[in-house]
Structures are given as C-alpha cells and as structure tokens.
Image (cartoon, rainbow, N blue to C red):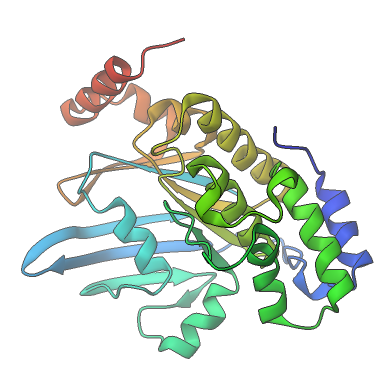
Length: 282
C-alpha cells in the first residue's frame, strides 16, 4: 500500500529537518501566470527521420498533462528534451519562463533542480540500497546533516510504501517497486515538475492502480506539475487535466481530457477503440 502524507505534514517535515531550502517557493503575483512549460513549434529528427514536427503546447503550474499515442510517435522524446538530454532541431522550449534549448550542461543542471524524471526502468543506482538511492539527491544538494537526511528519507520511503525494502538493492525489486522508489528519490530533490515515462508499462493492474493513486495524491496534496507519458487510456482518465495526443510525430489533439474523449478525429477514435479492446472495463 502507498501511505498518505498531507501537504502540510510534508512541508512541516522539511522545516523540522532544517531543509527549508528544499520547499517549493510560493506562487507569486495576481497577474496571469506564464505557463510553467511551453513548447513552441518544436521539431526533432534522428538520422533524417522526423520524430516530432512543429509541436506546440503549454501548461500551467499544478496541472497534469498526459501524452498519449502509439509506440514510436515521440512521446518520451518530448520528456528527454525537457530534461536537456536531447536538443530540438528547431523551436522553443520554455520552463518557468526560461528558454532551455540554448543552455549548456551547467545551465541544464539548474533546470534539473526544478524538473525531475521517473524513468521506465527506475534508473536507480544498482550498487546502492533503496535507502541510499533516496538519500542521494539530498546529499548531492547538501545543506542537510546526516540525521536530517535519514529522517527525511524514512518519511519519503513511507509515502511510497517501500518501508519493507529499505535495505534491498534495486535488482531484487519488482518493476512496480522500482518505480515507487524512483518516485521517492525524485521527491527528495523537491522539484517543481515531475515527468513520468510510461509508469504502468510491465506492471500488473494492481500495481498500476497504486502508482496512479500515488501520482494523483502528489498532484492533489503537493501541487506538483506533472507530465505523464502513457499508452494506457484508463490511467490517463484518472490523472489528466490536459491530453496531448501524438500521431506520426504531430500533435493531433491538445486540450482537456473531456474534449479528447469526445473528439471525432478517426485516429483518436481508433486509439480509444483499441485501448478499450485491449483493456476492457473491470
């Protein structure tokens, strides 16, 4: 089970451990907010093959965007560009108003303090225990003594229900457990934005539901801005404020979940029909 921790409790936890600098800054002014993430006419190709073409979308702080589409349409590529692992051939990507496409590695390190990614494989350090994996971002950031690190790590592990595997190494964990621990490690960095790459791939429906519950609770209680790449429409229905549907490298739809479900576009209707066939209602 994933245990519940309230936003107030988590903030209090940070303050008690002397880690106030990890807390998210309060939203400022009453003027219309600039989108926290904005893609404008972004294109990228590999080996002469276009992967994303003229992609534009934006989202506001606290929203959850689900990127949907068949395999190979560039869903995960969009996340990797946000992290600076890939550079677009053209177009603009802005995070909290800052253009990131021209940043060098040092500049991207500053962005990655605000944006973190939970990879499909968890991307945990195989030589470190669960406890040490979650502690890693805190120690790397610095400013927190070891007792405070251990207290914060224990609470984060409790949030994702991994208390029984704190001394295990990642190789001994199931895929679902690895992803839960990866989420705890992501939270240790206190990001503004969390990116999830196919969080339900290769996990059973019960674990998928628990991961969905956790992501949903983090959005509701902690106010995270999230982008979730998924092929699972039922998972998206539980989480999405906005949907971006990619088809052959282009945005076939961008907008609210309700509009996506009701969209008459034949590619979208085919996707929905195949998803319903593959994952029948329980």
